[in-house]
Length: 421
Ligand code: AMP
Ligand code: GLY
Image: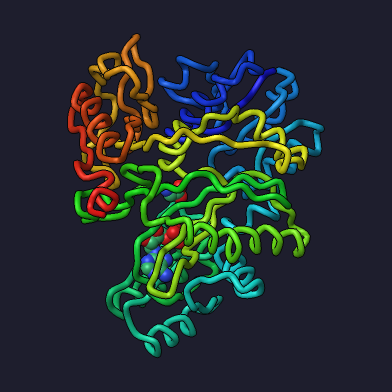
């Protein structure tokens, strides 16, 4: 069969890498892909958000299965557009993907179905939002309602910062229409964990747990990024917590969406925080996480294509999903300056010198005159397995040390929370 993967980051490289292992797959395309993906798939020069062109391509090439990485095409309705053309696609519809596309909707859903989350209020008026912030005080969290490329959440330690966030989001519209409404919510304390789950709208099968590292510098210092690394499993996620999350969060979310006339198929990602009062939802995403997917998919033993087909055909209950017992660690190598401004086009050395068993997923890379060069903020996701997290960490860093490019920056402490336990 022919598969098309939509997107061009580290997550999509991991998807292509895993899909390529399926004996059922003959050809893989990726739109737009990157230099690493190009080694395993045919890259097509179509942007991930150009839905019309993607539909045309899938029809012309007779693609049997399309898999969507990023949130923007999902919330814009790529699944609806493909389905209307009789094309098979893995992911939630536009209405279902609103669980990520609108934080106000997600909070309302959680409230209605009793899913534990931070106390909150939604505002369409900035004065009212500010009044509420003055009333409840800091710390407090301000969130733009819509998609903001991961930058729409401001965790404010003081009232002034929170008020400024409201001004920026609602008045200065720094995230455009995503800031027509804001969610103001209670600040929660605890360790974070990402739970990605396959669901066909009825059956929910959680994947192995993972944890990402959002801050740019060691010890969780500096600004938030798209993610500087990930590991799996997350030891904070005990069997007891997993049972609670399945019963109280994942299943009610999927059943609630169905009851609201928004049946959800695809990967539902619950961003959780384990507080003193138990796990609570920080956010839902309508897709695989990045970089969590790199650490999770290297542990998947089963055929991902078979799972995806079962999801689409609503027979996920028939599939047994097997995981490797090893731990996995993904260290992101980024361009110096990221998440601020950075330079691109530096040649990357040592990509073929990494020890066997490590996988170097490409995020922001391109090919120039036969050489692989940096082309984005997050450049590579160097991923390794090991019998435990400590060994996987060592293996990943052994590979990182073989790779170099000008101004490369990476965290030295990926996995530290797991190692501290
Ligand atoms: P989100 O995109 O909603 O996951 O938010 C991004 C990050 O902001 C999360 O991973 C947390 O680190 C932080 N965050 C979000 N909501 C809260 C909250 N209610 N309390 C504390 N931190 C939060
Ligand atoms: N790692 C966070 C995300 O994928 O949204």
